Figure 1 (spheres, rainbow, N blue to C red):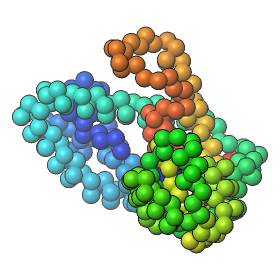
Figure 2: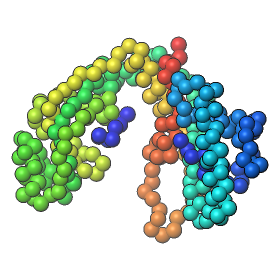
Figure 3: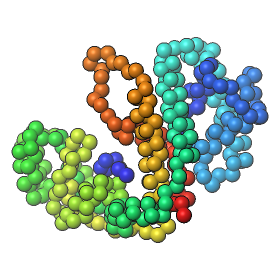
Figure 4: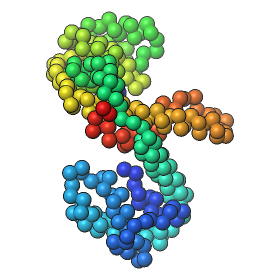
Length: 295
């Protein structure tokens, strides 16, 4: 788990495409001959709150689908569906939807994590569970120095005020703000390092190509234990298992495919686990793990 402090696919786009399968299910309404089906209504439930009355929600959402259909038909009449921009966006959204549905299909073959696996995960990640803390910190962000020596020199400053002065003297742009950091969203090694850091003493850490200097102002112990911890650990492990299955699928697809790049566009090699497509798809899949581990 990583957090930005430290770290619904629009079906309307596909509805405009003339190459997808026809919707199935009983028609609940038609708009100039275009059917809105029970299956289409059910698809909208993915955006509904978990405790909503499904029958009432269908009745509420149906007029919105009618409006969306009318606007999509108006766009077609204007020829927007023939534009290059539409083609690019349609392909993009279609690929996202297919990858998400692939993740859901693979998820059906992924077993729930065992009790033993859940216990091992909780024990190995204390700062996500029993020792979880939130830190209110005074934080400075600045660009990565040109050399290791320059970074070490900045690290000699004993206060954030001294560091801010040094950055100013070096004409290095920086921002300073108070932020709340949750140890559950940190790399375990970083979480342990921050947990042991005396309050007020700056700690330098890399972040998204930048560096941050953080001085703890206040600590808030927020332990997670019991069923809440077990359910969360189970969900994390299940999402990881789905991502691993997606990664294997991607690895095989890469091996079987012929991929060519124009000069200057060939990317650096990456492993399937680094794929943003996998991360995005699995983030919307695997919620069944909240029911707990397999027993």
